[in-house]
Amino acid sequence: MADTYDATKHIFGLTWLDEYAEVEASTPTGIEAQAFLNEWAEKIEELSSAGLSDELIETEFFEALYSEDWYDQQNNAWLAVQEMRYGGDPKGEWVKLQDTTRAFIEEALRSLGFVDDLTGELLIEVSDSFVEDVIFESADVPVRGAAVQLNENTAAKFIENNYLPKRSFVEEEGAFDIGAGSLRTLYNELEGLARSNFVQVNKEDLWDIAISLKREDITLDYAYDIITSQMADQFSFLEDTPILRRIMGSELTYNTDGTLNRQAMSSLQSHLNPYQNRIASLWGVPYNEISMTDLFGESLDDFIVGEPGEEHFMKMKDVRDWARSHPNYKQSEDYGTKMGDIARSMVGVFGG
Image 1 (tube, rainbow, N blue to C red):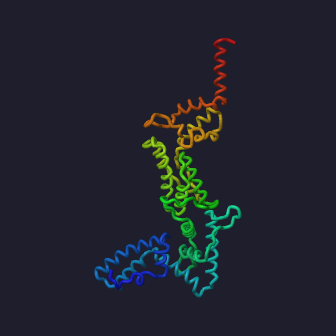
Image 2: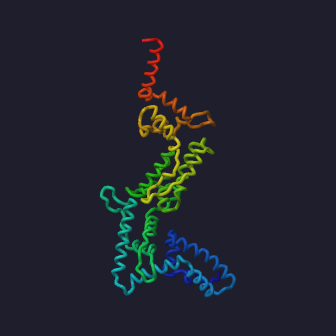
Image 3: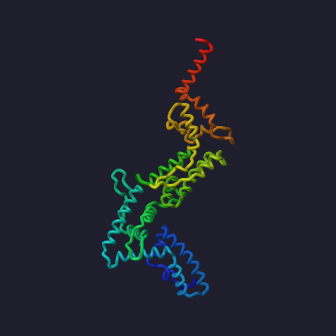
């Protein structure tokens, strides 16, 4: 590039463009802006080397920029916001937008769990500058000249990405201190998914997954892959079995309230349900009173049989025999009935 070409002077400094390319690089608009500018950094180098003047390079750049949908939309929103803020219209509209945006931010933070569990007070003080940032990032202008409106979906994502730190999955960042709310609920649901596959995912990894999901840095499929991959490592004898393929091929979705929908999900627990039912039936107790981990260990070590290299879970006959040899079986109605039948048979044979 020519030594006299000043990219900062000729390209950046355009209203909000430099801010979104540099400061807000993680926002949807920022990502598009940064990709566009990275592409043009290479083009400018090529055009300059080819001998094009600075003025022609700048003209081509602006023509390309103005044809971008994201630029047109965001620039219109920015102009509308500035007109509300500094123009001749009554300042009340701008103040109203600030107030409603602040209320939206505070409610979003409460929903996430940034509240004192005892007092219910918000733990974060929302600054005026952040209110303006949310407006700037999330403002929609339905038609040119219409009132600016907050796009709540975009705003909510901007708020989450601002207050939930990006997790690395590599560095130890510890648990995340947050109260009851949607993030804590998601964490608890992920912990439940791990338990349903009889694996213990440490808190660090669970927070990595939960926060990354909230930030939309990863997908639900990727999150479940993390858990099921740990399960596959723990029960390596399941490799290439229909059980594992069914579990790792299942899908998770979100309910309308943001909780996890597990209806289409398969887990190791769902595979073991028939065995759990069989034990409950033999012992004459409700199904929900049978805990596979209480009976066979947190990692189901006692449910695994076979010689080294040939390990497998108990088969149904093994489970039946095991359940009948257990002290609980002798207290069951089934055991009493069988013993009564045996006694009556003996009386019939030997007389009485």
